Image (cartoon, rainbow, N blue to C red; front, side, top):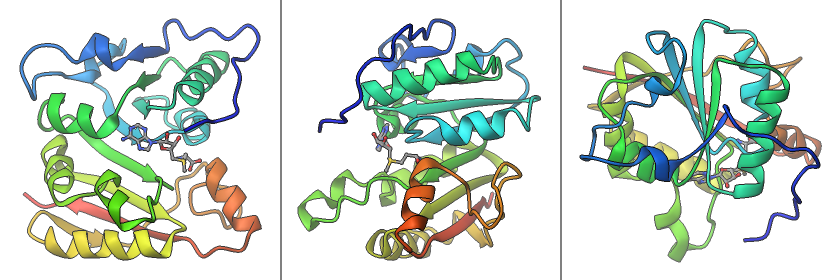
Length: 218
Ligand SMILES: C[S@@+](CC[C@H](N)C(=O)[O-])C[C@H]1O[C@@H](n2cnc3c(N)ncnc32)[C@H](O)[C@@H]1O
């Protein structure tokens, strides 16, 4: 996939960007990404598929006592987002370059996250590509495993077929999660649901936006 984004002049990601290859070592389910942060005991939120990092830039400043990890596998977006977080001086944020479903599902330790955010993930509309969607029965189990007791999983999409897919997976995971109405983060503006780049683009096109929050049941 080509993204049409060149490297920004003067881009610097040191201190904010990290490769999954550096983290993904040792035994499965042994990596604790909270250790990346200066204050690892703070509450911890993960965004899978951060794109240009708009949600992180907007929300991390509102929650300075929370650590945020963004994950992005498209290198130009990863670099752009990491550099953007650095330019904003957000010491409570990091960007990881790599496959978030592999990292979270295979490498990460249990009960590490207070919140997991999945905003406008790729819909992979063709049936033969559905296996590439981030939400699968197996990943629902991993999201449950990664969340602390009472932790939240936020799902937002503009894509009707992906929304239907989410509903089916939520129904099959009803022993793992309770559903709750999604509440926009305080960084959302006006009637935005989250206020990410893709949301802003899709709203101009008049697409409906679906959202739900899942609460980890013990
Ligand atoms: C449609 S964009 C949305 C970006 C952002 N969340 C927004 O709303 O503006 C989806 C992003 O998720 C990233 N992505 C999808 N699956 C991923 C995965 N398994 N690991 C890391 N990044 C992923 C894509 O590269 C893309 O940048």
